[in-house]
Length: 152
Image (tube, rainbow, N blue to C red; front, side):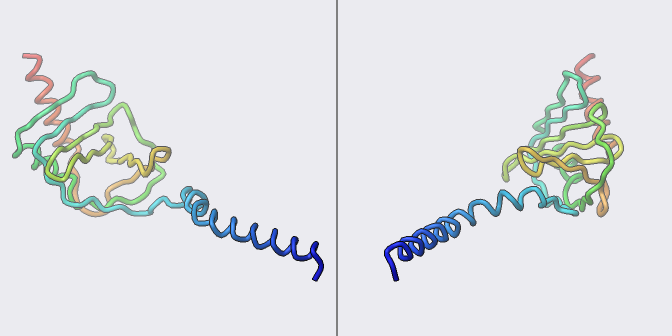
């Protein structure tokens, strides 16, 4: 084997090693775009406080009433959400955020029951409830009661 052939084999081996070392780092980035789950399930939420923001209003409902926070959290616990192509209506959207012993959990949901879920920083997907029950009107009523009480 000549020196040139040995050098060519060494270069090919080095290039192969580089590909093997970089491939595990690159594959997740390539696969990322295709990982939009068809279904999601919300777990049990334990809440001690709740914050509700609505549409583009400047008022935010905030309560540290643990019983109220937990009753609202129960609305979101154990839901099965299925991917949808429905549009998300930001004008009727509520951002509901719970704080509790497991940290903070939050959901965006509009009056049509469409949930906007952030799957990662650069990707959101819309889902609708396909298992369990969610009462948008009940959550909105808590927000409105708090808002009108602040006006009195």
